[in-house]
Length: 132
Length: 491
Image 1 (cartoon, each protein chain N blue to C red):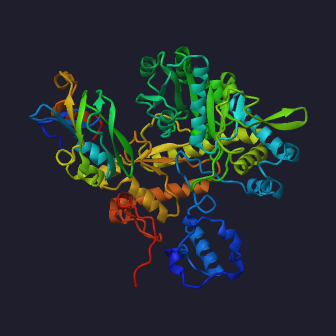
Image 2: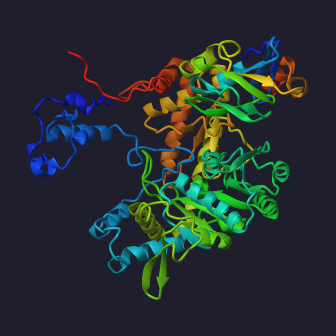
Image 3: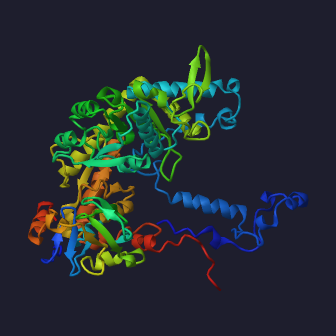
Protein backbone atom coordinates (compact mmCIF):
# COMPACT_ATOMS: atom_id res chain seq x y z
CA UNK A 1 0.00 0.00 0.00
CA UNK A 2 1.40 3.37 -0.99
CA UNK A 3 2.07 5.97 1.68
CA UNK A 4 -0.12 9.10 1.54
CA UNK A 5 0.91 11.56 4.29
CA UNK A 6 -2.09 13.40 5.72
CA UNK A 7 -0.42 16.84 5.87
CA UNK A 8 0.16 17.21 2.09
CA UNK A 9 -2.00 18.17 -0.88
CA UNK A 10 -2.10 16.09 -4.05
CA UNK A 11 -2.98 16.10 -7.76
CA UNK A 12 -4.66 13.44 -9.84
CA UNK A 13 -1.43 13.19 -11.83
CA UNK A 14 0.39 12.01 -8.68
CA UNK A 15 2.29 15.11 -7.56
CA UNK A 16 2.32 16.22 -3.93
CA UNK A 17 2.45 19.80 -2.59
CA UNK A 18 3.79 20.92 0.79
CA UNK A 19 3.16 24.49 2.01
CA UNK A 20 6.35 25.85 3.59
CA UNK A 21 6.54 28.49 6.33
CA UNK A 22 7.97 31.15 3.97
CA UNK A 23 4.93 31.06 1.68
CA UNK A 24 6.58 28.91 -0.99
CA UNK A 25 5.59 25.31 -1.73
CA UNK A 26 7.62 22.17 -2.27
CA UNK A 27 6.57 19.75 -5.02
CA UNK A 28 7.42 16.12 -5.60
CA UNK A 29 5.94 12.88 -6.91
CA UNK A 30 4.03 10.52 -4.66
CA UNK A 31 5.08 7.16 -3.29
CA UNK A 32 2.57 5.54 -5.65
CA UNK A 33 4.13 7.35 -8.63
CA UNK A 34 7.72 6.38 -7.77
CA UNK A 35 6.63 2.79 -7.22
CA UNK A 36 4.75 2.64 -10.52
CA UNK A 37 7.71 4.08 -12.44
CA UNK A 38 10.26 1.81 -10.78
CA UNK A 39 13.90 2.69 -10.14
CA UNK A 40 14.58 6.14 -11.53
CA UNK A 41 17.69 6.66 -13.63
CA UNK A 42 17.26 10.30 -14.62
CA UNK A 43 15.50 13.34 -13.19
CA UNK A 44 15.33 16.79 -14.78
CA UNK A 45 14.18 19.67 -12.59
CA UNK A 46 13.35 23.24 -13.68
CA UNK A 47 15.69 26.17 -13.14
CA UNK A 48 14.99 28.93 -10.67
CA UNK A 49 13.16 31.89 -12.13
CA UNK A 50 10.98 29.95 -14.55
CA UNK A 51 7.30 30.89 -14.48
CA UNK A 52 4.98 27.89 -14.73
CA UNK A 53 1.26 27.55 -15.31
CA UNK A 54 -0.87 25.04 -13.45
CA UNK A 55 -0.80 21.74 -15.36
CA UNK A 56 2.30 22.68 -17.38
CA UNK A 57 4.99 19.99 -17.70
CA UNK A 58 7.94 21.29 -15.70
CA UNK A 59 10.08 18.30 -14.72
CA UNK A 60 10.90 14.88 -16.15
CA UNK A 61 11.36 11.60 -14.30
CA UNK A 62 12.72 8.62 -16.16
CA UNK A 63 13.05 4.99 -15.12
CA UNK A 64 14.22 1.98 -17.10
CA UNK A 65 10.55 1.38 -17.92
CA UNK A 66 9.25 4.81 -18.79
CA UNK A 67 9.80 8.55 -18.97
CA UNK A 68 7.12 10.76 -17.51
CA UNK A 69 6.41 14.47 -17.28
CA UNK A 70 5.77 16.05 -13.90
CA UNK A 71 3.11 18.78 -14.03
CA UNK A 72 3.12 22.00 -12.04
CA UNK A 73 0.31 21.57 -9.49
CA UNK A 74 -0.28 25.33 -9.41
CA UNK A 75 0.88 28.52 -11.13
CA UNK A 76 3.98 30.20 -9.80
CA UNK A 77 7.65 30.94 -10.18
CA UNK A 78 10.25 28.26 -9.62
CA UNK A 79 12.51 29.27 -6.75
CA UNK A 80 14.76 26.23 -7.07
CA UNK A 81 15.07 22.64 -8.26
CA UNK A 82 16.53 19.81 -6.19
CA UNK A 83 20.03 19.73 -7.65
CA UNK A 84 20.96 16.58 -5.77
CA UNK A 85 18.70 14.49 -8.02
CA UNK A 86 20.97 15.04 -11.04
CA UNK A 87 23.51 12.65 -9.55
CA UNK A 88 21.25 10.65 -7.25
CA UNK A 89 17.86 10.11 -8.91
CA UNK A 90 17.29 7.12 -6.61
CA UNK A 91 16.53 9.50 -3.74
CA UNK A 92 13.07 10.00 -5.28
CA UNK A 93 12.49 6.25 -4.86
CA UNK A 94 13.84 6.01 -1.34
CA UNK A 95 12.36 9.22 0.11
CA UNK A 96 9.68 10.62 -2.24
CA UNK A 97 8.14 12.95 0.35
CA UNK A 98 11.41 14.20 1.87
CA UNK A 99 14.87 14.35 0.32
CA UNK A 100 13.36 13.42 -3.06
CA UNK A 101 11.45 16.67 -3.53
CA UNK A 102 11.70 18.00 -7.10
CA UNK A 103 11.18 21.75 -7.01
CA UNK A 104 10.08 24.70 -4.91
CA UNK A 105 7.60 27.24 -6.24
CA UNK A 106 6.46 30.69 -5.18
CA UNK A 107 2.74 30.50 -6.02
CA UNK A 108 1.13 33.45 -7.77
CA UNK A 109 -1.31 35.27 -5.49
CA UNK A 110 -4.27 33.10 -4.63
CA UNK A 111 -2.94 30.07 -6.53
CA UNK A 112 -2.54 27.86 -3.48
CA UNK A 113 -6.05 28.39 -2.17
CA UNK A 114 -7.59 28.46 -5.65
CA UNK A 115 -5.89 25.36 -7.08
CA UNK A 116 -7.99 22.24 -7.33
CA UNK A 117 -5.70 20.19 -5.12
CA UNK A 118 -6.78 16.99 -3.43
CA UNK A 119 -6.65 16.18 0.26
CA UNK A 120 -4.91 13.00 1.37
CA UNK A 121 -8.26 11.24 1.70
CA UNK A 122 -9.34 12.34 -1.79
CA UNK A 123 -6.04 11.22 -3.32
CA UNK A 124 -6.36 7.89 -1.55
CA UNK A 125 -9.68 7.42 -3.33
CA UNK A 126 -8.02 8.26 -6.69
CA UNK A 127 -5.52 5.47 -6.03
CA UNK A 128 -8.24 3.02 -5.08
CA UNK A 129 -10.18 3.89 -8.25
CA UNK A 130 -7.04 3.16 -10.29
CA UNK A 131 -6.78 -0.21 -8.60
CA UNK A 132 -3.49 0.69 -6.94
CA UNK B 1 23.72 -23.58 -22.78
CA UNK B 2 25.49 -20.92 -24.86
CA UNK B 3 28.67 -19.60 -23.32
CA UNK B 4 29.31 -15.94 -22.72
CA UNK B 5 31.41 -14.63 -25.56
CA UNK B 6 34.40 -12.51 -24.60
CA UNK B 7 34.97 -9.06 -26.04
CA UNK B 8 37.24 -9.14 -29.05
CA UNK B 9 39.70 -7.00 -27.07
CA UNK B 10 40.07 -9.84 -24.60
CA UNK B 11 41.36 -12.14 -27.37
CA UNK B 12 43.93 -9.56 -28.40
CA UNK B 13 47.64 -10.47 -28.27
CA UNK B 14 50.34 -7.99 -29.29
CA UNK B 15 51.61 -8.55 -32.79
CA UNK B 16 48.82 -10.88 -33.92
CA UNK B 17 46.86 -10.12 -37.04
CA UNK B 18 46.01 -11.12 -40.58
CA UNK B 19 49.00 -9.76 -42.41
CA UNK B 20 47.51 -10.24 -45.87
CA UNK B 21 44.66 -7.88 -44.89
CA UNK B 22 46.81 -5.12 -43.48
CA UNK B 23 46.56 -1.83 -45.32
CA UNK B 24 49.42 -0.71 -47.51
CA UNK B 25 52.01 1.46 -45.85
CA UNK B 26 50.92 5.05 -46.39
CA UNK B 27 52.94 7.10 -48.84
CA UNK B 28 55.14 9.42 -46.71
CA UNK B 29 54.58 12.21 -49.22
CA UNK B 30 50.79 11.95 -48.73
CA UNK B 31 51.25 12.04 -44.97
CA UNK B 32 53.26 15.24 -45.27
CA UNK B 33 50.09 17.03 -46.36
CA UNK B 34 48.36 16.25 -43.06
CA UNK B 35 48.75 19.04 -40.51
CA UNK B 36 50.65 17.88 -37.45
CA UNK B 37 47.71 18.72 -35.19
CA UNK B 38 45.54 16.19 -36.98
CA UNK B 39 48.03 13.30 -36.83
CA UNK B 40 47.90 10.65 -34.14
CA UNK B 41 50.72 10.70 -31.66
CA UNK B 42 50.12 7.06 -30.72
CA UNK B 43 48.44 4.25 -32.65
CA UNK B 44 44.77 3.57 -31.79
CA UNK B 45 44.04 0.75 -29.35
CA UNK B 46 42.67 -1.86 -31.71
CA UNK B 47 42.29 -5.57 -30.97
CA UNK B 48 45.06 -7.68 -32.47
CA UNK B 49 43.65 -11.05 -33.52
CA UNK B 50 44.08 -13.49 -36.37
CA UNK B 51 41.52 -13.86 -39.13
CA UNK B 52 40.15 -17.16 -37.77
CA UNK B 53 39.76 -15.68 -34.29
CA UNK B 54 37.83 -12.74 -35.75
CA UNK B 55 35.59 -15.08 -37.77
CA UNK B 56 34.90 -17.32 -34.76
CA UNK B 57 34.22 -14.37 -32.48
CA UNK B 58 31.63 -12.79 -34.73
CA UNK B 59 30.07 -16.11 -35.70
CA UNK B 60 29.63 -17.00 -32.02
CA UNK B 61 28.18 -13.58 -31.30
CA UNK B 62 25.67 -14.04 -34.11
CA UNK B 63 24.66 -17.39 -32.62
CA UNK B 64 23.71 -15.70 -29.35
CA UNK B 65 21.03 -13.68 -31.12
CA UNK B 66 17.33 -14.19 -30.88
CA UNK B 67 16.19 -13.54 -34.42
CA UNK B 68 13.25 -14.23 -36.69
CA UNK B 69 15.27 -16.88 -38.47
CA UNK B 70 15.81 -18.76 -35.19
CA UNK B 71 12.98 -17.96 -32.77
CA UNK B 72 9.33 -16.89 -32.42
CA UNK B 73 9.57 -13.14 -31.90
CA UNK B 74 6.14 -11.81 -30.79
CA UNK B 75 7.39 -8.29 -30.03
CA UNK B 76 4.22 -6.22 -29.97
CA UNK B 77 4.11 -2.99 -31.97
CA UNK B 78 7.11 -4.17 -34.02
CA UNK B 79 5.65 -6.63 -36.56
CA UNK B 80 8.59 -9.04 -36.54
CA UNK B 81 7.44 -11.10 -39.51
CA UNK B 82 9.56 -13.43 -41.57
CA UNK B 83 11.73 -11.78 -44.22
CA UNK B 84 11.64 -14.02 -47.30
CA UNK B 85 15.11 -14.86 -48.57
CA UNK B 86 14.13 -14.09 -52.15
CA UNK B 87 13.71 -10.40 -51.25
CA UNK B 88 17.27 -10.30 -50.05
CA UNK B 89 18.56 -12.30 -53.00
CA UNK B 90 17.15 -10.00 -55.67
CA UNK B 91 18.01 -6.80 -53.83
CA UNK B 92 21.62 -8.04 -53.70
CA UNK B 93 21.95 -8.27 -57.49
CA UNK B 94 25.26 -6.60 -58.39
CA UNK B 95 23.50 -4.20 -60.77
CA UNK B 96 21.59 -2.79 -57.78
CA UNK B 97 24.43 -2.99 -55.28
CA UNK B 98 27.07 -1.37 -57.45
CA UNK B 99 24.94 1.44 -58.83
CA UNK B 100 26.31 4.86 -57.87
CA UNK B 101 23.58 7.20 -56.64
CA UNK B 102 24.86 9.94 -58.95
CA UNK B 103 24.85 7.69 -62.01
CA UNK B 104 22.73 9.11 -64.85
CA UNK B 105 19.04 8.21 -65.07
CA UNK B 106 19.65 6.54 -68.42
CA UNK B 107 21.77 3.84 -66.75
CA UNK B 108 19.35 3.20 -63.89
CA UNK B 109 15.99 2.76 -65.58
CA UNK B 110 15.50 -0.66 -63.99
CA UNK B 111 15.98 0.64 -60.47
CA UNK B 112 13.81 3.69 -61.17
CA UNK B 113 11.07 1.44 -62.57
CA UNK B 114 11.11 -0.66 -59.36
CA UNK B 115 10.87 2.43 -57.17
CA UNK B 116 8.12 3.92 -59.34
CA UNK B 117 6.09 0.73 -59.10
CA UNK B 118 6.67 0.61 -55.34
CA UNK B 119 5.24 4.15 -55.08
CA UNK B 120 2.22 3.05 -57.10
CA UNK B 121 1.64 -0.11 -55.06
CA UNK B 122 1.88 1.79 -51.77
CA UNK B 123 -0.62 4.33 -53.10
CA UNK B 124 -2.97 1.49 -53.98
CA UNK B 125 -2.81 -0.25 -50.59
CA UNK B 126 -3.05 2.97 -48.56
CA UNK B 127 -5.66 4.79 -50.63
CA UNK B 128 -3.43 7.83 -51.03
CA UNK B 129 -2.73 10.11 -54.00
CA UNK B 130 1.02 10.45 -53.67
CA UNK B 131 3.88 8.52 -52.04
CA UNK B 132 7.46 9.52 -51.22
CA UNK B 133 9.98 6.80 -50.41
CA UNK B 134 12.92 8.76 -49.04
CA UNK B 135 12.27 8.82 -45.23
CA UNK B 136 14.63 6.28 -43.69
CA UNK B 137 12.73 5.15 -40.59
CA UNK B 138 9.30 5.31 -38.99
CA UNK B 139 10.12 8.38 -36.92
CA UNK B 140 11.63 10.00 -40.03
CA UNK B 141 8.37 9.36 -41.90
CA UNK B 142 6.38 10.81 -38.99
CA UNK B 143 8.58 13.90 -39.12
CA UNK B 144 7.93 14.21 -42.87
CA UNK B 145 4.19 13.80 -42.34
CA UNK B 146 3.80 16.45 -39.65
CA UNK B 147 6.18 18.79 -41.52
CA UNK B 148 3.83 18.49 -44.52
CA UNK B 149 0.80 19.27 -42.33
CA UNK B 150 2.54 22.40 -41.11
CA UNK B 151 3.63 23.37 -44.64
CA UNK B 152 0.04 22.95 -45.82
CA UNK B 153 -1.38 25.30 -43.19
CA UNK B 154 1.44 27.78 -43.74
CA UNK B 155 0.91 27.82 -47.51
CA UNK B 156 -2.72 28.81 -46.86
CA UNK B 157 -1.60 31.61 -44.54
CA UNK B 158 -3.22 29.82 -41.59
CA UNK B 159 -0.26 30.45 -39.33
CA UNK B 160 -1.71 29.84 -35.89
CA UNK B 161 -2.43 26.13 -36.33
CA UNK B 162 0.29 24.58 -34.20
CA UNK B 163 -1.55 22.05 -32.01
CA UNK B 164 -1.35 18.34 -32.66
CA UNK B 165 -3.88 16.18 -30.85
CA UNK B 166 -2.58 12.81 -29.68
CA UNK B 167 -4.84 10.21 -28.03
CA UNK B 168 -3.45 8.31 -25.05
CA UNK B 169 -3.43 5.09 -27.06
CA UNK B 170 -1.35 6.52 -29.92
CA UNK B 171 2.08 5.21 -30.79
CA UNK B 172 4.73 6.37 -28.33
CA UNK B 173 6.73 8.36 -30.86
CA UNK B 174 3.84 10.64 -31.91
CA UNK B 175 4.19 13.31 -29.21
CA UNK B 176 7.94 13.46 -29.86
CA UNK B 177 7.35 13.96 -33.59
CA UNK B 178 4.87 16.76 -33.03
CA UNK B 179 7.29 18.49 -30.68
CA UNK B 180 10.19 18.08 -33.14
CA UNK B 181 8.07 19.82 -35.78
CA UNK B 182 7.48 22.79 -33.50
CA UNK B 183 3.93 21.86 -32.55
CA UNK B 184 2.29 21.74 -29.14
CA UNK B 185 0.89 18.35 -28.09
CA UNK B 186 -2.65 18.08 -26.73
CA UNK B 187 -3.31 14.67 -25.29
CA UNK B 188 -6.88 13.36 -25.17
CA UNK B 189 -8.12 10.38 -23.15
CA UNK B 190 -9.64 7.14 -24.34
CA UNK B 191 -12.90 5.55 -23.20
CA UNK B 192 -13.07 2.42 -21.04
CA UNK B 193 -13.47 0.18 -24.10
CA UNK B 194 -10.37 1.66 -25.73
CA UNK B 195 -11.86 4.03 -28.32
CA UNK B 196 -10.98 7.72 -28.56
CA UNK B 197 -13.11 9.86 -26.23
CA UNK B 198 -15.02 11.74 -28.91
CA UNK B 199 -16.43 14.33 -26.48
CA UNK B 200 -12.88 15.16 -25.36
CA UNK B 201 -11.82 15.40 -29.00
CA UNK B 202 -14.65 17.82 -29.76
CA UNK B 203 -13.60 19.95 -26.81
CA UNK B 204 -9.95 19.89 -27.89
CA UNK B 205 -10.27 20.92 -31.55
CA UNK B 206 -10.41 24.54 -32.62
CA UNK B 207 -8.76 27.25 -34.73
CA UNK B 208 -5.32 26.20 -33.46
CA UNK B 209 -5.68 22.54 -34.43
CA UNK B 210 -3.07 21.54 -37.00
CA UNK B 211 -4.08 17.90 -36.92
CA UNK B 212 -4.43 14.65 -35.01
CA UNK B 213 -2.03 11.70 -34.95
CA UNK B 214 -3.69 8.30 -34.69
CA UNK B 215 -2.72 4.68 -34.90
CA UNK B 216 -5.49 2.36 -36.04
CA UNK B 217 -5.62 -0.23 -34.61
CA UNK B 218 -4.30 1.64 -31.59
CA UNK B 219 -1.37 0.68 -29.44
CA UNK B 220 -3.88 -1.35 -27.39
CA UNK B 221 -4.41 -3.54 -30.49
CA UNK B 222 -7.98 -2.26 -30.81
CA UNK B 223 -9.62 -0.95 -33.97
CA UNK B 224 -10.89 2.61 -33.56
CA UNK B 225 -14.58 2.07 -34.24
CA UNK B 226 -15.58 5.72 -34.53
CA UNK B 227 -12.81 6.67 -36.92
CA UNK B 228 -15.15 8.28 -39.44
CA UNK B 229 -16.61 10.50 -36.72
CA UNK B 230 -13.10 11.39 -35.54
CA UNK B 231 -12.17 12.32 -39.12
CA UNK B 232 -15.27 14.48 -39.51
CA UNK B 233 -14.65 16.38 -36.27
CA UNK B 234 -11.00 17.08 -37.08
CA UNK B 235 -11.70 18.07 -40.70
CA UNK B 236 -14.58 20.36 -39.71
CA UNK B 237 -12.23 22.10 -37.30
CA UNK B 238 -9.78 22.66 -40.17
CA UNK B 239 -7.20 20.08 -39.09
CA UNK B 240 -5.70 17.12 -40.92
CA UNK B 241 -5.50 13.45 -39.94
CA UNK B 242 -2.19 11.68 -39.63
CA UNK B 243 -2.13 7.86 -39.72
CA UNK B 244 0.80 6.30 -37.94
CA UNK B 245 1.51 3.15 -39.91
CA UNK B 246 2.91 1.26 -36.92
CA UNK B 247 -0.05 -1.10 -36.95
CA UNK B 248 -0.84 -1.16 -40.66
CA UNK B 249 -0.25 -4.93 -40.74
CA UNK B 250 -3.62 -5.45 -39.04
CA UNK B 251 -5.63 -3.93 -41.86
CA UNK B 252 -3.44 -4.48 -44.91
CA UNK B 253 -5.63 -5.39 -47.84
CA UNK B 254 -8.85 -4.92 -45.82
CA UNK B 255 -9.25 -1.22 -45.05
CA UNK B 256 -7.34 1.68 -46.52
CA UNK B 257 -6.35 4.67 -44.36
CA UNK B 258 -7.27 6.97 -47.25
CA UNK B 259 -10.82 5.60 -47.15
CA UNK B 260 -11.04 6.20 -43.40
CA UNK B 261 -10.39 9.90 -44.00
CA UNK B 262 -6.67 10.16 -43.31
CA UNK B 263 -4.71 12.86 -45.14
CA UNK B 264 -1.21 11.58 -44.51
CA UNK B 265 0.31 8.26 -43.51
CA UNK B 266 3.73 6.80 -42.96
CA UNK B 267 4.32 3.15 -43.66
CA UNK B 268 7.06 1.22 -41.93
CA UNK B 269 8.32 -0.89 -44.79
CA UNK B 270 10.50 -2.74 -42.25
CA UNK B 271 7.34 -3.85 -40.45
CA UNK B 272 4.41 -4.28 -42.81
CA UNK B 273 6.44 -4.98 -45.92
CA UNK B 274 8.87 -7.36 -44.34
CA UNK B 275 12.26 -5.76 -44.75
CA UNK B 276 14.69 -6.79 -42.01
CA UNK B 277 14.65 -4.72 -38.85
CA UNK B 278 15.63 -4.74 -35.25
CA UNK B 279 19.06 -3.80 -34.04
CA UNK B 280 18.72 -0.25 -35.27
CA UNK B 281 17.83 -0.60 -38.90
CA UNK B 282 18.16 0.39 -41.60
CA UNK B 283 14.45 1.05 -41.92
CA UNK B 284 12.24 2.82 -44.40
CA UNK B 285 9.29 5.04 -43.52
CA UNK B 286 7.62 5.88 -46.82
CA UNK B 287 4.93 8.59 -46.60
CA UNK B 288 1.63 8.69 -48.46
CA UNK B 289 -0.61 11.76 -48.78
CA UNK B 290 -4.03 12.78 -50.02
CA UNK B 291 -4.42 15.26 -52.88
CA UNK B 292 -4.13 18.34 -50.67
CA UNK B 293 -0.63 17.43 -49.50
CA UNK B 294 0.90 16.13 -52.75
CA UNK B 295 2.70 19.44 -53.53
CA UNK B 296 4.54 19.21 -50.19
CA UNK B 297 5.98 15.69 -50.52
CA UNK B 298 9.69 15.33 -49.77
CA UNK B 299 11.90 14.86 -52.82
CA UNK B 300 13.14 12.97 -54.72
CA UNK B 301 10.17 11.09 -56.14
CA UNK B 302 10.24 8.93 -59.24
CA UNK B 303 8.15 10.14 -62.16
CA UNK B 304 7.27 8.44 -65.44
CA UNK B 305 7.08 10.11 -68.81
CA UNK B 306 6.00 7.63 -71.47
CA UNK B 307 8.37 4.70 -71.09
CA UNK B 308 11.09 6.69 -69.32
CA UNK B 309 11.53 7.19 -65.58
CA UNK B 310 13.22 10.18 -63.97
CA UNK B 311 13.84 11.74 -60.57
CA UNK B 312 11.39 14.46 -59.58
CA UNK B 313 13.15 17.17 -57.61
CA UNK B 314 12.59 20.63 -56.16
CA UNK B 315 12.17 21.93 -59.73
CA UNK B 316 9.08 19.70 -60.11
CA UNK B 317 7.70 20.27 -56.60
CA UNK B 318 8.58 23.85 -55.61
CA UNK B 319 6.51 23.59 -52.40
CA UNK B 320 8.25 20.37 -51.26
CA UNK B 321 9.33 20.19 -47.62
CA UNK B 322 12.74 19.31 -49.08
CA UNK B 323 15.17 16.43 -48.86
CA UNK B 324 15.30 14.02 -45.94
CA UNK B 325 18.24 11.96 -47.15
CA UNK B 326 21.21 12.53 -49.40
CA UNK B 327 19.77 10.37 -52.21
CA UNK B 328 16.77 8.03 -52.39
CA UNK B 329 16.49 6.97 -48.74
CA UNK B 330 17.57 3.41 -47.96
CA UNK B 331 17.29 2.15 -51.51
CA UNK B 332 18.31 -1.41 -50.64
CA UNK B 333 15.46 -1.61 -48.14
CA UNK B 334 13.00 -0.14 -50.65
CA UNK B 335 13.96 -2.85 -53.13
CA UNK B 336 13.30 -5.59 -50.57
CA UNK B 337 9.83 -4.16 -49.88
CA UNK B 338 9.16 -3.95 -53.61
CA UNK B 339 10.11 -7.58 -54.15
CA UNK B 340 8.03 -8.66 -51.13
CA UNK B 341 4.97 -6.95 -52.58
CA UNK B 342 5.57 -8.45 -56.02
CA UNK B 343 5.94 -11.91 -54.46
CA UNK B 344 2.67 -11.53 -52.54
CA UNK B 345 0.70 -10.13 -55.43
CA UNK B 346 -2.68 -8.50 -55.00
CA UNK B 347 -4.37 -11.56 -53.47
CA UNK B 348 -1.51 -12.34 -51.16
CA UNK B 349 -1.50 -8.77 -49.94
CA UNK B 350 -5.18 -9.05 -49.05
CA UNK B 351 -4.56 -12.05 -46.83
CA UNK B 352 -1.77 -10.43 -44.77
CA UNK B 353 -4.21 -8.58 -42.51
CA UNK B 354 -6.51 -11.60 -42.33
CA UNK B 355 -3.86 -14.01 -41.13
CA UNK B 356 -2.17 -11.46 -38.87
CA UNK B 357 -5.45 -10.82 -37.02
CA UNK B 358 -6.44 -14.48 -37.07
CA UNK B 359 -3.16 -15.47 -35.44
CA UNK B 360 -3.49 -12.72 -32.82
CA UNK B 361 -7.09 -13.61 -31.96
CA UNK B 362 -6.31 -17.33 -31.83
CA UNK B 363 -3.38 -16.71 -29.49
CA UNK B 364 -5.44 -14.34 -27.33
CA UNK B 365 -8.32 -16.84 -27.07
CA UNK B 366 -5.99 -19.68 -26.10
CA UNK B 367 -4.16 -17.59 -23.50
CA UNK B 368 -7.47 -16.48 -22.01
CA UNK B 369 -8.60 -20.10 -21.87
CA UNK B 370 -5.33 -20.87 -20.08
CA UNK B 371 -6.32 -18.37 -17.38
CA UNK B 372 -4.54 -15.19 -18.45
CA UNK B 373 -6.27 -11.80 -18.13
CA UNK B 374 -6.78 -9.34 -20.95
CA UNK B 375 -7.67 -5.71 -20.22
CA UNK B 376 -10.33 -5.45 -22.95
CA UNK B 377 -12.14 -8.80 -22.76
CA UNK B 378 -15.09 -7.62 -24.84
CA UNK B 379 -12.94 -6.43 -27.73
CA UNK B 380 -11.55 -8.45 -30.61
CA UNK B 381 -7.82 -8.08 -31.14
CA UNK B 382 -6.26 -6.41 -34.15
CA UNK B 383 -2.90 -7.82 -35.17
CA UNK B 384 -1.75 -7.67 -31.52
CA UNK B 385 -3.23 -7.81 -28.05
CA UNK B 386 -2.38 -7.19 -24.42
CA UNK B 387 -2.16 -9.62 -21.54
CA UNK B 388 -2.00 -8.05 -18.11
CA UNK B 389 -0.20 -9.84 -15.28
CA UNK B 390 -1.44 -7.42 -12.64
CA UNK B 391 -3.10 -10.26 -10.72
CA UNK B 392 0.08 -12.40 -10.77
CA UNK B 393 2.12 -9.39 -9.62
CA UNK B 394 -0.25 -8.77 -6.72
CA UNK B 395 -0.92 -12.33 -5.64
CA UNK B 396 2.33 -14.10 -6.49
CA UNK B 397 4.79 -11.21 -6.64
CA UNK B 398 5.76 -12.38 -10.12
CA UNK B 399 5.77 -9.56 -12.67
CA UNK B 400 5.47 -9.15 -16.42
CA UNK B 401 9.24 -8.70 -16.54
CA UNK B 402 9.71 -12.04 -14.75
CA UNK B 403 7.49 -13.83 -17.28
CA UNK B 404 9.37 -12.12 -20.12
CA UNK B 405 12.75 -13.26 -18.79
CA UNK B 406 11.55 -16.81 -18.20
CA UNK B 407 10.20 -17.02 -21.77
CA UNK B 408 13.80 -16.73 -22.98
CA UNK B 409 14.57 -20.04 -21.24
CA UNK B 410 11.69 -21.61 -23.18
CA UNK B 411 13.16 -20.41 -26.47
CA UNK B 412 10.87 -17.47 -27.17
CA UNK B 413 11.78 -13.85 -27.62
CA UNK B 414 9.76 -11.95 -25.04
CA UNK B 415 6.79 -9.85 -26.12
CA UNK B 416 6.96 -6.09 -25.58
CA UNK B 417 6.79 -5.40 -21.84
CA UNK B 418 5.34 -2.45 -19.93
CA UNK B 419 4.07 -0.79 -23.11
CA UNK B 420 1.56 0.75 -23.60
CA UNK B 421 1.86 2.52 -20.26
CA UNK B 422 -1.94 2.60 -19.91
CA UNK B 423 -2.08 -1.06 -18.85
CA UNK B 424 -0.17 -2.18 -15.75
CA UNK B 425 2.10 -5.24 -15.89
CA UNK B 426 1.39 -5.78 -19.54
CA UNK B 427 2.76 -7.93 -22.30
CA UNK B 428 1.99 -6.67 -25.81
CA UNK B 429 1.91 -9.74 -28.04
CA UNK B 430 2.05 -9.66 -31.85
CA UNK B 431 2.49 -13.04 -33.51
CA UNK B 432 2.28 -11.79 -37.17
CA UNK B 433 0.84 -13.81 -40.04
CA UNK B 434 3.96 -15.86 -40.72
CA UNK B 435 3.75 -18.14 -37.66
CA UNK B 436 2.15 -21.57 -37.75
CA UNK B 437 -0.47 -22.86 -35.32
CA UNK B 438 2.17 -25.22 -33.85
CA UNK B 439 4.37 -22.31 -32.85
CA UNK B 440 1.45 -20.41 -31.31
CA UNK B 441 0.42 -23.53 -29.35
CA UNK B 442 3.97 -23.98 -28.09
CA UNK B 443 3.97 -20.38 -26.87
CA UNK B 444 0.72 -20.97 -24.96
CA UNK B 445 2.23 -24.09 -23.37
CA UNK B 446 5.29 -22.13 -22.28
CA UNK B 447 3.14 -19.36 -20.76
CA UNK B 448 1.02 -21.93 -18.90
CA UNK B 449 4.15 -23.69 -17.65
CA UNK B 450 5.57 -20.38 -16.38
CA UNK B 451 2.26 -19.65 -14.64
CA UNK B 452 2.51 -23.03 -12.88
CA UNK B 453 6.08 -22.26 -11.85
CA UNK B 454 5.01 -18.83 -10.58
CA UNK B 455 2.48 -20.55 -8.32
CA UNK B 456 4.66 -23.45 -7.17
CA UNK B 457 8.27 -22.20 -7.18
CA UNK B 458 8.18 -18.46 -7.96
CA UNK B 459 11.94 -18.04 -7.49
CA UNK B 460 12.44 -20.09 -10.64
CA UNK B 461 10.64 -17.31 -12.53
CA UNK B 462 11.81 -14.26 -10.62
CA UNK B 463 15.48 -15.20 -11.07
CA UNK B 464 15.18 -16.20 -14.75
CA UNK B 465 16.76 -16.50 -17.24
CA UNK B 466 18.73 -19.60 -16.27
CA UNK B 467 19.95 -20.85 -19.65
CA UNK B 468 21.27 -17.67 -21.22
CA UNK B 469 24.95 -16.67 -21.38
CA UNK B 470 24.22 -13.88 -18.90
CA UNK B 471 21.72 -13.78 -16.06
CA UNK B 472 19.43 -10.87 -15.38
CA UNK B 473 21.33 -7.66 -15.88
CA UNK B 474 21.12 -4.71 -13.52
CA UNK B 475 19.53 -2.35 -16.02
CA UNK B 476 19.12 0.35 -13.38
CA UNK B 477 22.82 0.40 -12.52
CA UNK B 478 23.72 0.22 -16.21
CA UNK B 479 21.63 3.33 -16.88
CA UNK B 480 22.93 5.20 -13.85
CA UNK B 481 26.61 4.38 -14.38
CA UNK B 482 27.16 4.49 -18.12
CA UNK B 483 30.38 2.64 -18.82
CA UNK B 484 30.71 1.80 -22.47
CA UNK B 485 34.48 1.73 -22.94
CA UNK B 486 36.61 -1.38 -22.63
CA UNK B 487 39.81 -0.90 -20.72
CA UNK B 488 42.45 -3.53 -20.12
CA UNK B 489 42.56 -4.90 -16.61
CA UNK B 490 45.89 -3.90 -15.06
CA UNK B 491 48.12 -6.97 -14.69
